Length: 172
Image 1 (cartoon, rainbow, N blue to C red):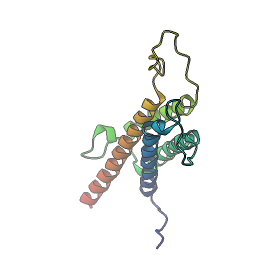
Image 2 (image 1 turned 180 degrees about the vertical axis):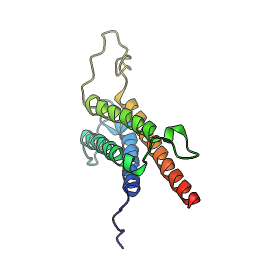
Image 3 (image 1 turned 60 degrees about the horizontal axis):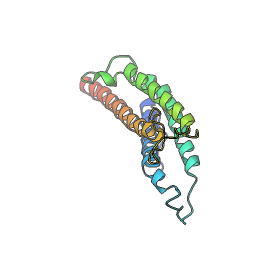
Image 4 (image 1 turned 120 degrees about the vertical axis):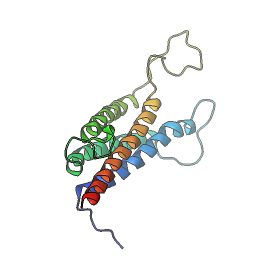
């Protein structure tokens, strides 16, 4: 049986949040597990055919960016007003959520560039175990931060939607 198409903005928003959660899990896997599976001089590439790591990472980051835009467009329709729902937290206010989405969008844009840039050269005196300059944040760390941020903002939006629904049901 096919589910009917969602007709309310909050239903579309909920679906987009599910998509963002899936992208967040994929991004965390790509930034924590996949680098360990990539070929290194001391560990040859596995014999199993694999999808291109860079292509999957780029597709995930672009999907996150589209998802953040979609959620940003649906948010004012699904959560009108600027105050948090009754009994809700200040971080569940639409203005606070929009601000967090903006910061996550900037981080995703930064990652879309930095994740594919070559690493800067290390100084000659750097020990062999140092992979990146200490003054430069690792793109993998930023990716993990982005994935957790996406999950947190999705939870805040869901809580706000449920709070509004519960307040509306209680007053009816």
